[in-house]
Length: 395
Image (cartoon, rainbow, N blue to C red; front, side, top):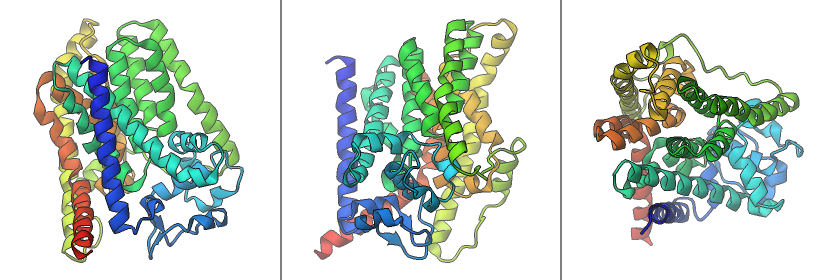
């Protein structure tokens, strides 16, 4: 069996498993209401235009990010007035890739948007597994490594809560595959899409620009700069249509991470379940520090020859580790560091590069940060699983 066919097989298996999981979760925990996956909160009004959907709302809750991307999928060009029901339109609409693709796939039929959105999530899961399987085979590993893509926090959270982070995570894997195989056209396509999924995709452009500059590939460098234009054009449109976003992400180096590391329990804890969740979140913070140590041990032996001898000791994976480690150091928003459901999503592209190093170099401890940052997500999945079994046994 050829490699693309093997990779496609594992991609289909992954999507099938995710579908069965979601089907059981929705059937037994959400009473069959698929749009409950968006986790809409009662503290935000549902747009009257979507009243027919009878969107379930979590009582006395802000809900989660997926509810806003759900609205964007119904109004990607902000022409229907749904922006007033989104917490931060200037920020959310910049991340148009997943909801925009759902809008296109639904072909203008409002009743098809929710299904289209879920299918887009499945498509990115399949693509991520496919590319990761191909990379594993390139590194003389088993294609089943591709299934690990489903366990990366951004992917698992997108499955659970319909967030858009799975897209930039999948495109990160795609970038690594095409860059390592010198497939310029496909690399540029992935780079152009990544920032439209989430702003962290801009770091991928920085990765490829640095790699191209170090290798003196001037055509690649010029093309990388051009790849930012679609995002800039869309960001200008969003800025002209909405009020500026008040979100602030950057700080002095290490400020956000050190502050969160000192503050073991950032929120008042009531009950054993909340305490366990907080401790699992802190295990994720430990995972961030381990990832930083791993990044330094990986990069340091390569930095001197790369800087002094202008050698190509730094490949796409090393540059990816470097730039996303830098992003972890510079992110200072307390909202990001509040819990692993936030910082693990933001840092998932970094986890992708570390996982690829683990597979390539057989340094499997480089997968440890992914495990630690995913503990809270895994615990929540276990809670959902208990709910499924409880309903099945009581049926």
